[in-house]
Length: 304
Image 1 (cartoon, rainbow, N blue to C red):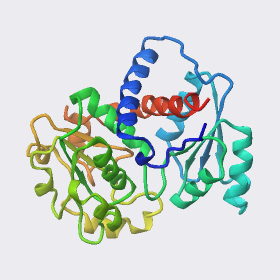
Image 2 (image 1 turned 90 degrees about the vertical axis):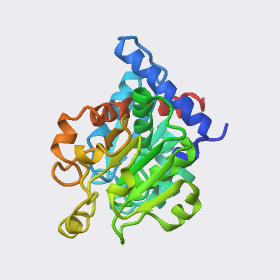
Image 3 (image 1 turned 45 degrees about the horizontal axis):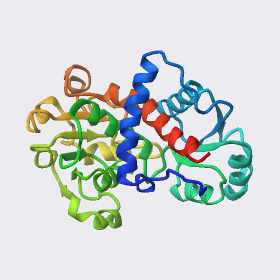
């Protein structure tokens, strides 16, 4: 059987993604009921981290433990990857000893190279270009609260970053329209936009983009590796804060999401984050666990 990887949402079909979301909901029920389900007993997930993490590490490590397997934490500080060993060599060695590999790093090309040389499934747990695992959690969260997202309007507010790119892929795979509100100079990848232009509208103010939307999503203005641009970005994104008042212009059933960590008072108001029932950010965060367990099951059990 061909080894399957999950580097972007496009690596699964729309039907597979929808089934995965439904399975994530079921796995959540199984875990919360106290039922023991261990399909990955004696299997090992290698977790390679070149970027720091809270939700990604905890969710994958807890997920493997709950599935009866083991998660092996590897940082670039502690492995030969951090000392210049070719990605190809590391991929061949690590995949010969482990049953799957999860990578959180800067270069998307590095993940692609690793996958091309791996004999086991490789999961992209975030690169500078894409963050598909977060989108699985987001789509699960919307499904649990509002049902099918097909045909709805989603608004992304902020930088055209890796999350924005994954929302563009999600619009294609889950069949919704995506409004993107970003300042000039911070647009998402032009080729990706062009390839999905029938599903995307770009606006220069969040007020225009959010009107009537069913889901509103934002992220920090300066992602990991862009900290030195913080002050410049604060100026560029002035006026792009998502607030409860702004949410009032969305659909009456609209939800607010944020992949976290959040900077209250910058991209989102504290009121919306903490005191507004439309904010489902902590459900969304927990669902990283359940959605990724569904992904691990699909890639690791399905490939046996």
